[in-house]
Length: 406
Image 1: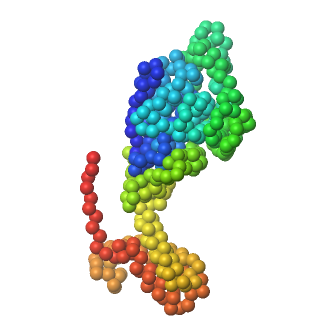
Image 2 (image 1 turned 45 degrees about the horizontal axis):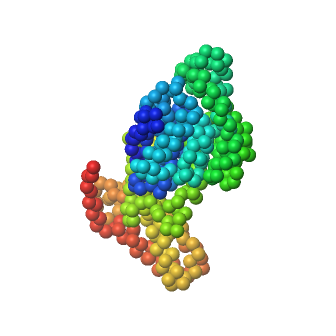
């Protein structure tokens, strides 16, 4: 993943730790801000998976630790829902000053409630996606019910949340109880996507129903079937990210204006592999792809292998070349199917090959032509298949000029 570590200062002069995840080519179409769940941090695995999905759609994602959490300065005990909202607004101001104002807001759990509140203070925001969000901010008080009376009476108490101790002050509770979300949601005036699991044991599905009822169109609901609240399974967060990314592109200025701008440089393919694993993000012009290795080879099988891409290039080129030729000749070619397989073979088993020792690469290509073609037409198309540009490149001398850049 292509990313930058950032630090910005909030309105209380506290330095907040952030991370900006970028598309592979570093040229985003738009920017998004992600607000993490209560007591979580920007480094939650699910947040990373969702950010990666948006990156593939050309969207940069800024995620940061709220005041007093993760690597950010400040005391969590002195924060509240209002300071979370102001942190989001400060993050948006930072993005606007240093990069580009955010057009998309994404929030998980209480972070979802926070982006609903913050959206009205961000003119650039056009779309809001919330995941497992409560219909009211004070929903979080359900997780500190045993300490509620103590906090009210003594002014503060230590509460265990997500297995960790946190000092909660009375001002935190009072602030949560002062926020009523229904009116805020009704006045949102942004496209809204609600993602929620019907088996969420932390924030019940009835919260999604209440938010959906309060919101005005355009609004959408996606069921995260079988997912837990934290989207612990990678498949759940990857699914959520893919859905949000596809939906959000409808609202990106660069893709909806009179002059549509696209990410990526012409005729350039960029591949980027992270610090661990083999999964590789690829930018081919404005198109995003993923390469990987099978699980048996130590990968995660989230994309085709590099040799799969090689065969895909040859197969696509073959099929397109045949289509072009048949169209020019006005032949009744109704469809083309090209099946390819790559393998290593002993050189001494190939009579036509110049190499006579060791191993060489063999690509088996089978072409199926559909339509009422006669014998001569089929024979000619088979000859044309060998003239596709990728085929000719693979058979010609290839020079790969490699430079090391910094």
